[in-house]
Length: 203
Ligand SMILES: N[C@@H](CCC(=O)N[C@@H](CS)C(=O)NCC(=O)O)C(=O)O
Image 1 (cartoon, rainbow, N blue to C red):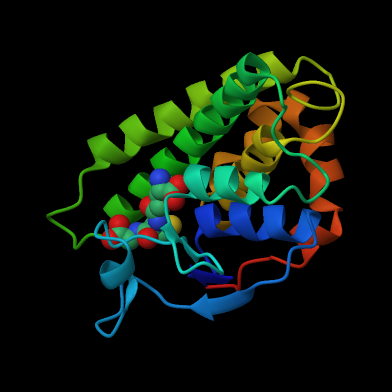
Image 2 (image 1 turned 120 degrees about the vertical axis):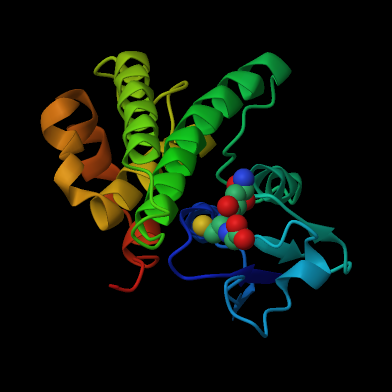
């Protein structure tokens, strides 16, 4: 199986962490959709990473779909519950966390637009989404070890990836001061080999 990825993409990192936790072998193919010679649009018409090419040749995107596919391979640990409604609850955590990541990516892209095209108002709007999303994650975690159930699941990975992405791109937001209930959770996940082995390059 091949994962087409950019090393700074948080969505890609989520999938690399799932692969590492499940110890699934794969080939990492670095391909940035922002580069002129990218192959990504041939595989994903939306032109986004991550893209997974399964051993069967079938192609999967986006990251929630890839995570769902990887779950079908049956490798432990399970990161989605067998019960359908419980799985939806984990997906809700994932969607909330990915939404925080979406807002951070949008704010970053807006901040990189040339002076005169950049909208401070839009950046502020996206930062409000981040703050509301983190407040809701903090409320849902409620001092527990994991977001859903008694073991790490996909929602936990997505939440920790979102927090790590904020550390990378928006350290000035200081999410630890604003949402201290998420700190012990993040510290615990950041210590895992799967997180340490998928640190984005600086820059
Ligand atoms: N919802 C998608 C988001 C993927 C995404 O936005 N990836 C970014 C990299 S962080 C990308 O490839 N952007 C290229 C573009 O928007 O043209 C997922 O979860 O996979």
